[in-house]
Image (cartoon, rainbow over all chains, first blue to last red; front, side, top):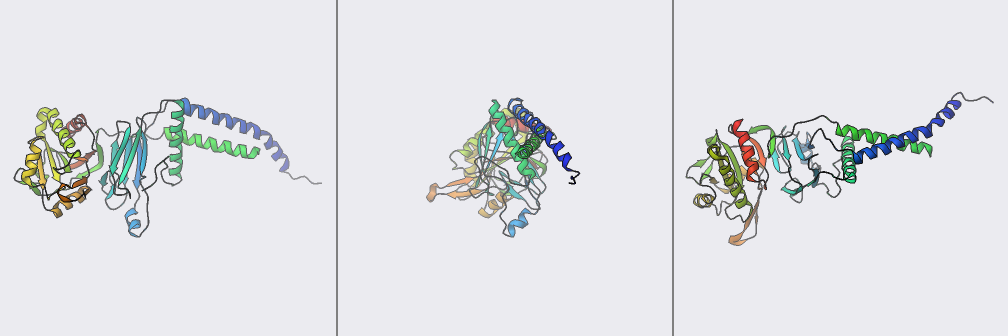
Length: 169
Length: 199
């Protein structure tokens, strides 16, 4: 009986699978340990939200566009600057202020607290910003990194900002 | 089964790579002011309203000074007294530099706030403060330029006005540089005004 030439290679590759799985599992374990124990260093304190170009036109066409979540969660000393950028052609009330086309507004927070701003972009008329204290425990660091990771992944995929409790206005 | 484990491990490795990448992203310098900063700054929308000092109030009139612009009404129970007291402390904390600072308080309640009432009210905080009033339409136009909300609450003569409580910081060249949300203390204003005065 004639043997398929690729069959031996598959068997050979299969031998390495457990080792690859073990290696990657160890990497995952090590990464989780690092995420829990290593001090957090961030290159940028900005938490960016943008009004995309064409937002006004799309709203005028009846499309419901959600940009800024009802509640934004920041962490003191890490991502504690709310950066709002208007890339549309018209001024927008964005969070606590009116932002001109092409303009950005950068709002730093210096105290852990819950802040409420009037914001006409939301049905409730207000925007909540929760500023948490810096993570102290391993669990806090792990949670912070996980939230950062999921938000980054969500944005990379073009999905809206995720938050534990807040919806979009 | 093994294949699933391998896929999961690959996914975990990808997630970890993203995590490392997110903490090594390109750096950006944080804002130097305590207030929220507009970038780029544009010329602050000007207006002409009736002043509590007996003359018209325009921003152009105060070129060369840092203007702290805020909106409110003299019957305000909590927000406006706090804001105005903070701004009075700011001027006191600036010493001689206070001469280069002008507080402008625009009413959101023209039905009750005439120029004389505003002058009397503001003098209790700082006699240098200037109030601005006008017709409802003129004031609404100013609020629109700055994205200010003002909503009447309640009826009768004791109604309240829910209004935006932020303070705008306008530099000596008349550019709208920053917005300080309600709740900051005078030290933050002194810090920011000093920065704007030397720029």
